[in-house]
Length: 337
Image 1 (cartoon, rainbow, N blue to C red):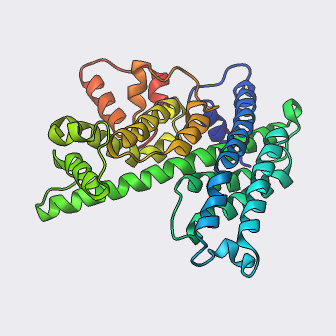
Image 2 (tube, rainbow, N blue to C red):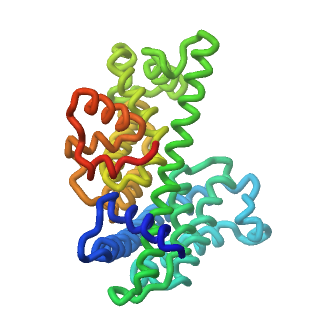
């Protein structure tokens, strides 16, 4: 790999600051944390699949599949209840084995395949379980983790391991960016047509009222924000911004924890306002973002605001106009976005 690429990658892993006399110390630390987080992922996977075993069993027992989804097409003609039980137990077992020995490609591949098969069960019943989606993608990304020899791993192996872990972070954040894009797109289309939309002060209030009418539910905070929609307006705009720029955060380690906490609050708010729960998404955010191996400094420092995508550039320009210049290290940490 050309030297300039290696320097860029090491700079990314170092959070944007310059290396001192021990240029690979941060890489080694990031590798150790990434390896630890991979084990946490497989431990959480084993617990997750074990907890949903009864639900997968009962779903097929009381409601036979309408049509087997493509990952389960091979099971046509077989006793579907036995098939579901076998792949579910196998999935939990592969996850537990991958937690015990994440270096084993066999266990990681086995888990990726069986979690895909488990996710095909609700689809075959005419439903979609969103909790599986991120889990599947991460499982398949972790298949590409390089073989390492623990603390004795070479520099290239450590770097490849960290980049693969970073790819999982980027993919999950890209999902949020896609959601934010469509929210923003719908908002701009409404503005162009001169009708209320996602940027309207009452946007979240209308969404909550429509949701409660459709589901006949009374979420804990839903009625309050429907009646006080102006309080919800900045919250909704903040969610659109945080989702829209999420992919840029993947390349700004100083923001990993901050975005992780914000997205967890977002999912918690989704439950309080709509009674839509995303527990698996919260677990993934804890493992990938809150415990990010690339975070180098406390996320709550004021100068972290200078790293905000788009807004950080605006804030930096305002400070420069007032004669309050950020130091060179902070400017160096800003990206081109």
